Image (cartoon, rainbow, N blue to C red; front, side, top):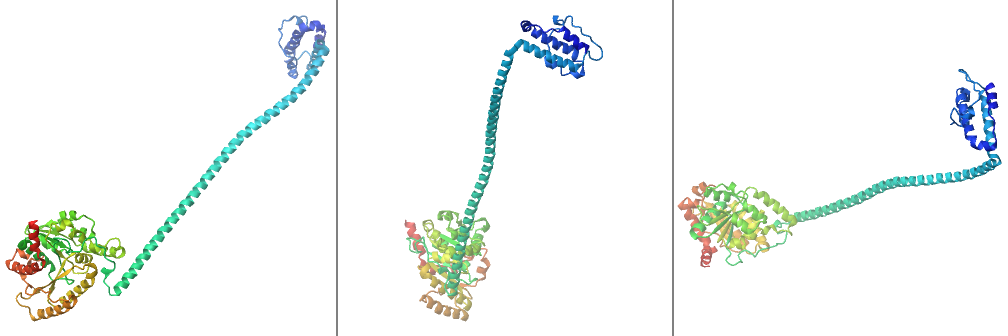
Length: 514
């Protein structure tokens, strides 16, 4: 307590006027005292901030103040010293300011209250504004998130809707296709039933559709060459041999421009004709197929026809292959179910009755297959004449009668201008006189065929084709007409009989004068 009493005795509170000039120094002295004398005490760590600091150590106010320092411990009771310093500070402020200070403090207190209120209001406003801003930002963020979610939802819904729409359209399209296929199936079924009923009723299948002609009837065009179809529904009667050797006759003896058309899927005429020129038929396209399909232009087929020189001088060939038979079947079925779109029965006439072919040939010889195929019916619908080779036996005669019977039923509708050129007896034992078996078959043929066509003068008597070893020897490898003079005489005799009816030489002469 000695330090406190000494400090109290040496610090004298001056008058108010002096305090105004020395107050800062006094406060600084007290603060310095606390800094040098009190701070070392662990109990008074809080004392120094109560008064502040900031006075030089050698200030006059400190002169004569007995301060006893000790190396260890404090010179005073720390708690009492703090209390005393607080009482000194209060007396100084009261002396300096007096009542004004109290009013100011009260005023400041009121202002402090008002400021506090305003601060609270401002704080509340700030908080509210901050909350508003945060809420707005949050709202934007929430709106953005919600918008994104809604966008995704709308996108999904749109995708689902479009998927349903497309799915509905697809289902509708499939339903329409199924309905169309069902209609097509029903149409084909009705056609099939109609065809079955038609055939069971004994009608010929080639009359199933009404004819659609794109060319004039054969034989009606000016300077139109005769188109001779050589056919028999019984095979092995010598029709290919007859076709090739008659072509040689008209080419060599009449001087006619001849066109050979092979419509037999066995391609026998093609093989024989090309063999006579020492050529391989595999090198040439199947022009008969193009003629049956009917898509190429006549000029294209004319230019592609194969010249058979030598040994011919003015003869050309429309060849075929083994694939021709399959094409015939496909064309027939397609025509049965779609006959109103394309009449396959008249495709050959598009070429043989065209200006290009008419102006370039004097006679056309068509070698037909031994069955009523698409190529066979095309040849019938295009030809002007029908020549039938037949072996004079009962079996062959019956096959010939059946063929003539079928052609006569089809003739009024499909080929009304076709004429029966005649029947040629082939493979007879001798050319001079028929044996009893051959005579009996010929008599039977005259009767039956005569009843069908209303005439008896249709057989080329005395113009038989004998069963010659030389003819059989050359068949398939060459043409006998060019190889054996005796065989040439046989076909010249038959050719002259045909020429008398066809008048090919006359046509050749007329064209020569033009």
